[in-house]
Amino acid sequence: MKLYCLQIIDNGVTNISKDYQRSGQGTNQAQDLARQLKGKFRRYPHYPQGTICELTWPMTSNWWQRFSDMQAIRNFYKKLFIH
Image (tube, rainbow, N blue to C red):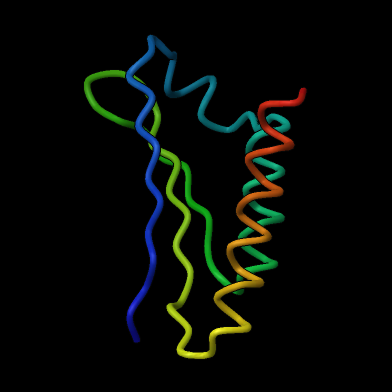
C-alpha cells in the first residue's frame, strides 16, 4: 500500500526528555486528522535538538475519497492558523 507522508521538522531547542511527552493543541488536531484520514500520527525527537511530527495516510484510488482527504487537511491547516 502506498502512503502519503507529511513531515514537519522543528529544530528548536527542546528538552526532549521533558517536553517529548507533552502534547498541545496542534498535536491533538494532528491526531484527530490522522483518525479522519485512517492514518497515523507520530511525534519523536529530532537530534541533536527539536521534534519531528509525521502524519501518514493511505493513498486512495477513488476521486471522492481523495477530495474528502484534501478537505480534512485544508480544515486542519485553517484550525492551526486561526488560533
